[in-house]
Image (cartoon, rainbow, N blue to C red; front, side, top):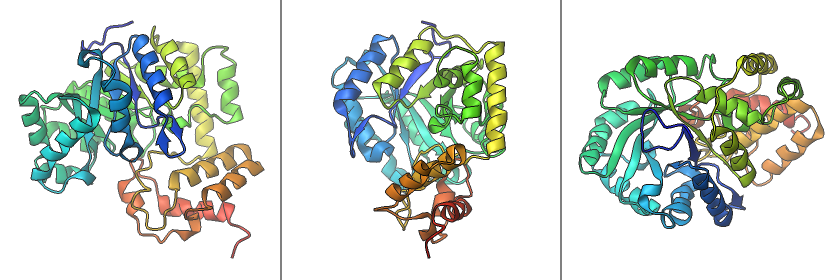
Length: 376
C-alpha cells in the first residue's frame, strides 16, 4: 500500500465515510458495520470520517460501537466536524466539541473540520471565533489537525484560506461529473487548494451513487473497457490528482467495501483509455440534463412540509434514465407518508442550505409536473 505523502499517520489514500452506513429500517445495522470496519482495517486502511448530523446523530454512536470501543486508539484515524446548526455563540462550541468526543468514545480527534464552509455560514464561524476555538483545542492536544469541508465557489475558498492560513487540509466535493460543473466548480476549487498548498480530501467521488448507477449509454462506455466497476473509475479519477490526500467513500454494505478496497489497496490512476471513457460518460450525462443531487439530505431537516427532496429527485432522475413505471411506483411510495413535490410552500430553506446550490423550488415544480399529472 502506498504511503500517504501528506500525513504519514494515514495508511493509503482511501477513507471510510460513515454517512451512508447500512441500515435496518431507521437504525444502523451495527453487526454489518462492525464487519465492514474490520474488513477496512484488515485491508490496511485506517481513516474514518463522520459528523454529528450524519444519520440523524447515529453515525458518531455507531463509530463508538463498531470502531473505537473495539480497537486501540493508534489503530485508526478519526475525523469529525463542527456544523453551524449546533452552535449559536462562541461559548457553545467547546461543550459541543466535548460532547462529540464522548459520542465517538475518544479523547481526541485526529482531524476536526469546520463543516460545509461557504459564503452563507463563514461569517457565523468568524463571528463566533470557531476557527480560533479549534486552534486552541489543537494546542490542548484535543485535535491533531484543523481543516475545513467546503461547498461553494472557488473565490470563497480563496478568501477563507487567506484569512486562516493555519488551515491544514481542505475537504471538497470532487468527481468527474462535477469537474467542470459551473455550480460546483470542482476543478477551480481544487486549483485554489493547489495554489495555497493545502492537501485535499475528496467527498462525493461517486456523486451520491449517481456515478455507479449509470444510464445505458454511459454504462456501455465503461463495459467496453472490460475493466473494473463504475465506482472504480470514479474513485480512481478523483484520487489521481497530485494534491489529493484522501478519497472518501460512503460505503453502505460489504459488497461496496470489498469492491472499493480491492482497487484502492494497490491504487493506480486512470490510464489514457479510461480517462477518455470518463470524458465520454461526462458528455452523455450533460446531454441527459439530470438533477445533480448527491442525497446529502441537508435540505430535509428544516422542510416544513416534510418533503423528502433527494428521494423525489432520484425518482425524477430514474424516470429520465429509464422511462418506465418503476420511478412512478417509487414516487408514490416516497410520498405515501411524506410531502409531495406539489406541497412545497416555496419557503426557500432548502436552497439556502443546499451544497450543490440547486434551484430546488423550481425542480420540485418539475417533479410535480412529471409525477402528479393526473391529480387535482
